[in-house]
Structure formats: C-alpha cells, structure tokens
Length: 222
Image (cartoon, rainbow, N blue to C red; front, side):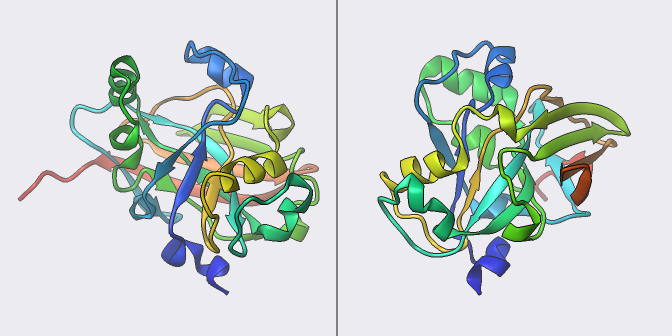
C-alpha cells in the first residue's frame, strides 16, 4: 500500500492556507472566502526525531497541522465521496521562512522558497481512519522547550476536509500517497537553533500521535 509509505512514495504536498480564521488574522490576512493552497516538495519531509534546519538569514516559524493522506487516485471528487479517497491521517508541521514569505507576498511572488527548504515538513506516520472518527474534533498542540505555543482544534477550520478534497481535485489529480495539510491554528511563531519542538494530535482526550524535533542551523556549503 503506497499510502502507508507516503513519506517515500507520495508525489506532492498540498498545503491549505489560512484555514483557521484566528491564524489568518494574526498575520494580518483577510479570512478567505474560498480555499487556496500552495505546493511543497516531498523532499522537505523529515521523520520523528530528526532535526529542523534553520537556513542562514531566515526567520523560521512553526505551524502544526492535521494532514490527510490520499489512498487512491482521483480527480473531480465530490465532497460527498471524499472519504473514499482518504487512506488515513498524519500529524505534521508546515515550517515557514516568514521573512521570505513576507517579501514574496509583497512582490506578488510564489511562496515556494519560503515553504520548500529541506526539513520544512516534519511529519509523523500514517494514522488509520478509525483512530480519528470525527475529523472536526481533533486537538492540535505544539510546544517549544515545554512551553505551549499552539493549542487548537479542527472544529475551527473554515473549510472542512471533504470540501478541501473536492476543491483540490477539481484543479489537479490527487494521487495515492499525496498529503493535504489542512491549515494551522493561531499561535505561530519562531523556532531557533538549540530549541526542541514537540507536537501532539489527539481526540476525545486521547493522544494519538506525538512528535519531537530538534532545531539546528542549516549546514553551510563545503
């Protein structure tokens, strides 16, 4: 099953922007009236226990998210059938070079550089669908050195998962192993070399996934 090995077999990461209204507001953005997304390279994946690299000159921010792992190929998928295309879920971080993103936004340029550095998508393993019976009630939290920075719930998502799958698949084919990052709650902020980032995903008071990452300077070229 390619979806189970999505970190190695997935072809794209589709990241939904501004899907929590309080997060949109904290960055001074308008709350969107329709979903929008950007793409991240799968080469940005790192697994639990590895290090997030901070490139020189970048102010890197954390964004904890629920990820949807696609289980079979599909296009023009109606929201009513979206669940048939979901293999499971995952806990992820969408790391962002915020200063580069701000420059790109000001100049009307894509966010690829700000979002696509190596190590900028720390991610967990596949979580089976039966472990998350209600995707509209998933707790997401993130701590830096034990201090809580983000603490939200997917009930506050503007666009729910079936609508996201319908929207994205109306533009491009979703393929087995692809991941949709569904947006981040408020509380984003910087991470610095030497810190430790931990995040959790849970539902109904039960922790389902826990991840831990170190933060280091990106190695300089030889």
